[in-house]
Amino acid sequence: MSRLAPSLVILVIASFGAPAFAADPSEGWDSGTDIRGGYQTYEPKDWTNMGDQEDSIHIETGLRYWYSMGTQTVDGASADSTGHEGEAFLRIEDHQTATYASATAGYSMAVTGEFDNGEIIDGAIGYAGADFGWSAFNDGNGNGFGGLVGYQYWMEAPDTGRTNFSTLNGGDSVDYNTATGQTFLPGDSTPNHVDINALRLGVQGKATFNDFIDFRAEVAAVPYATVKGVVGVEDPTFSTDVYNGPAQPPYSGVDGNINTMRSSETTLDGVGYGAMAEAFVGIHPTENLTFRLGGRAWYVQGTADTTYSRVQISDPQNIDNSDPDYEVAPVVTETNLIQGDTPFSFLRYGILAEMTYAF
Image (cartoon, rainbow, N blue to C red; front, side, top):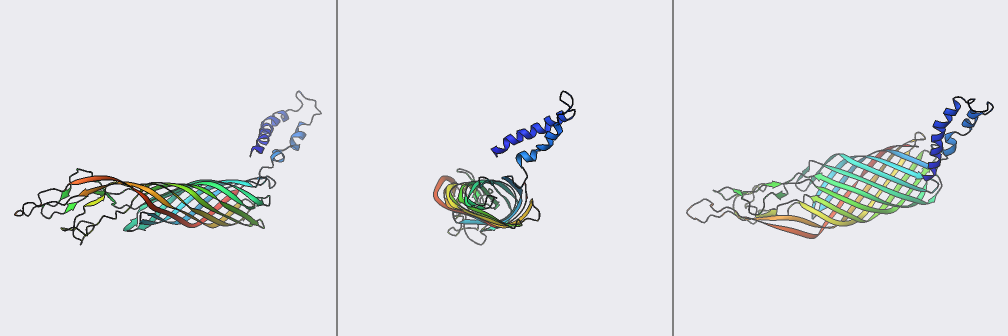
């Protein structure tokens, strides 16, 4: 692009300086001087060839729609979601050096799905990235095959809306039925929100046939990715099977109070690896307009440290056998925990449709 700078300077001088002289060519000049003739000979398009088919700089920009499906799995708990994402992108090619730079950014318009014990009621999916590629084998006109290096930010935030942890802290009082001993534990949830920052290394290719159909594809390994965020991990010990007494909602029909459960959101901090790929087939109804249809798949897996708190809740006690009431209230204690090597995986794939304009 630096080659364009001198041309732009000349273009500015021609646009503002030349008309001033041409307004009255006889004033201060020999009447035989042909100022207008000189101006017509050197038009801006002749200096730069910008927008011309001979110009080595080719810019393409447009909009995409991604219908995507995904699975988020952390510590054995999974959530499946469907997203509808709108996306903008820009691609700049330099045919002289057989290189290109591209950037994309997208965000979901709607997210639906289901998880182990319910439905995903809302949420968000977002992403942004940039690549630099070089076609080692090329035809000098933007087509060829070569490598790429890039960065991808990917955010997964399906809202499972479930009560996945208690709001109790150590020493808190617990509501309970003094006649039956049934406890009532307060709960809350937090939307999932995981940020993935990934390095991309891969290969890419582009081919155009008869100036009407093109094909574009890329496959990239993700050798390293950081994965951080908050997840709604279902508590595997959220069970009442081993306790006597009344049933504790939501486990109606099962005897026993809950005596231990998570008491905070679960934070995730780990590293992973994976792969990403996409491919498009496009048609060119006009020289500048292109419609494409394609597909995309992203996958990252790894292990992480998960950090959370857990409370233990004792059962109410009836120490007076002659009195049917439970006069001794439950006692709450709390422990902070870090669990290492927690497995996770994130997958998102689907179909893409795009409309672009090139100049």
